[in-house]
Length: 450
Image (cartoon, rainbow, N blue to C red; front, side, top):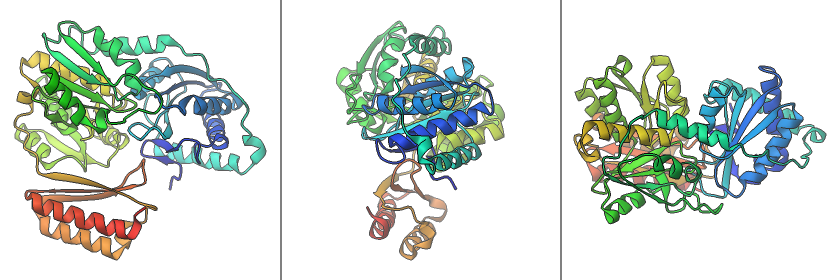
């Protein structure tokens, strides 16, 4: 079982284990050693989001990578999917992103992509972990020398923007006013230039002034109601909001209603199907996607498969079933053949292209998505014990499952990136839904609450 890598890389409070200097240096050494066995001497591409801890971690990681025989090129502040794309297209042995995505600014993380642009498989991450622990057990080998982060190659950002624009050649905003929330994160370094190159409309950029500590703070995909309010205030046609590393995007329609990843999957699936591009008429979603999405897709003759939460696992199921589209309610959307991971900027452009070609508004395109009432309660926990081994929690879950049966869903899981238990209840009756969500959350809080 992995101890360092979660569902989206290694993540913790910056400066604390495993993001303390000796461990970060050991991570660099272990990665360089693993990569050298595949393609010596390995070239590594490094990027980061806007957290103030990013440069220090980049320096420590670079020291380990260089000590292990790797060469490192920096793309500077750039989105996670940009690193995935550039790693593959520019022949790097690996791409590394220093980011904690949607987490608060105090956190940070290390995400690794292989030479094919895909996140590393679990078996490879486990092997790297073992080497990290071995190096930490020999203190002399992990003393952290001073190392400067490599000079930023601005051409990397330009190449990524060129790739994005090529996906929607001829796109026009059709005189629409668009509001874009960059979450004071990595999108701030890319989105203004990208959307400035789209003609035929007006683009309003918000939350694109990062200061190292305001990433995701009351903005971005964690707070889609913010961009929705901007849409209403600006009388705009559409809103787009990204998370800290811009691997996901959420939207707001012209009425200021939030449009989540389920709705994006629905309109993208129908568009691909109409053009004969939806392989096997199949979409991969997750256990968190609403039953209403499944019903709407079924009405269009489209099958929905459910993967474990995490775009990594969505992608695995997409590859195994040859699906052209997959994603999460949270806004990670993967278009097979176009990207190897969730890409918020690409998703935004492709959605704008669908709206442009359809001649309809965003609200019209998703009007028949009738969602079941759904609530997600996050419970801070001090440890992640198996929930079925805690009698009070197991009993609360069993009671919910028995009452809801075929009229709802119960999904209880630990976050792969934070010390949280997530309680998701879906039901036809909102009072019943909230009763069971509160009962289960309180049981977890009483036994494991932080």
